[in-house]
Image (cartoon, rainbow over the protein chains, first blue to last red):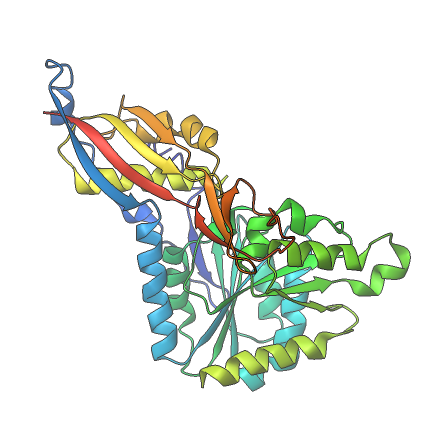
Length: 266
Length: 110
């Protein structure tokens, strides 16, 4: 195990081209650990010290790489969306349906983020869409560097669309800009109507919420109005669409939203 | 837990900027609305710093309070959660402070 960040080779980030057999370890930390043992020899020499002002944003490196991704998307007319949700909200089912019905029209490619397994990547690949799987190992979110690695493998065409399925988690992915055009949160009626109030950071950074599994509403005690109020409380400008990824209810409005964002970029 | 990545970024940044230093103290500003839990950063710090220029350094965290301006009535006030409302009842607030995530300074052996 790496003593610096606690990762191990087995737990490191891997990018897999789900269409082929390439399986590479690309993480390498993006840094060398800078062990400077010479410096330690003098650590106890007296107490003279000086203060150095740094005033540097902690996420400056990620933000810089995200900006680089954003420029690449803009230069190539590619629309990138960052899809985030808690585990089990139906992100992959929604993606399967979206790429099956709209994949060719909009040239959709998918980058799948999960801690482990190629299962989601394989589900998307079965629809025929280009897909790259990123496994974050111990990591609880995608970052801009992982997305850049994924993009190199996916190699999306000019004017196409990249849908990024982030690691299932309503907390951590909110903080890491990937360089995407918009963030989309997928919530589901099986999760409880208070999710926006419990996870305001996530709803605050999103442009769109898809409230999924609405076909199950007759069987549940889910207060849609309460959910909508909470979402607007966290983010007064948020747009919410109610959908069922399995039955197709409301899905046309999601497709219209995608077509609209895509057309704006062309 | 994104605080592990955040702490890793702190250590990487200092290692890159001062590869030959011996850091005795580091001061971070983690705003109360930043979405980062200061205690979790403290929890990770020693492990992440081990074997780097920050090994053994004292970690100080300033937790800046949040400030917001109401987009409806222009009032400015302190806020310490993202769901705060203005006294006038409006929901839409512009955050002025509290989202900081900064490495402020380091004290290094001369």
